[in-house]
Image 1 (cartoon, rainbow, N blue to C red):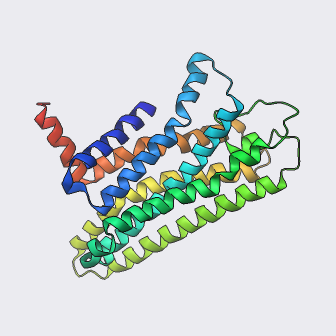
Image 2: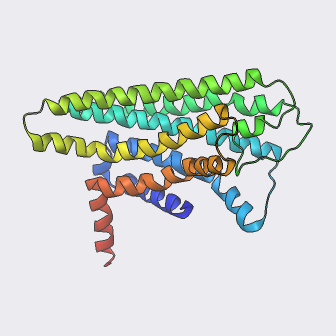
Image 3: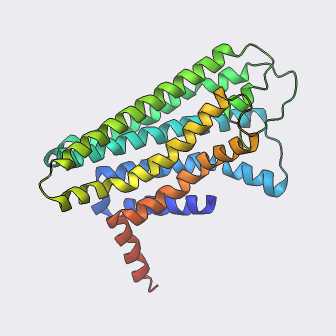
Length: 280
């Protein structure tokens, strides 16, 4: 699955980067999402494979903090790019004549920069907060990667402020993105219902289908992981929690290029042309 994630997202980047016809807002945001997926999966999966295959069952403390930063900050970026793509679909369907004038190259770059800056700024304190905690008991993490709450639970100090910061930031970012993604698709649905042609409405919704599939996979597993780590008191078996947490890091980066490649006509045709050119 990790190999599929790397190859799939690199293929998306290569196809869009080399085809000027795909230099449109939807595909540029997809490029940003693919880059985020590559960093997100690579921040955890190679070490995880080393644990399972090579028995490398330890990680340096600074490396653990770095892994924690990349996982959480790029998860926030992924959520932000989902919101950006939802807004692009809203403009494309609800204001089609103004699509290119609203989402100019400069605005797309600005949106991408804001999403990246948000992830970096809000999650940069995490490693510093954890790095100052005393660990006077066990240093064994009951997890396959350095998840923030899994590491914090090992500290022998008052962690109320640290936990409160993490909970507040994650909740606000997640709630903001989900709210406006839902609002965008609500407005899209209202616009589609007013279209005189049923075929035109189905075609408009079809352009959103791949995006909705990816969003459901990402937010379902992310919310489950977030809630169980912070509010469950042993009611959910630990191996189930770890499994879902791994799904949340690995499955979206694996499925994103597959879903977008299969359901997006331009990308699908570009891939098929490549195979035809190679004589496959």
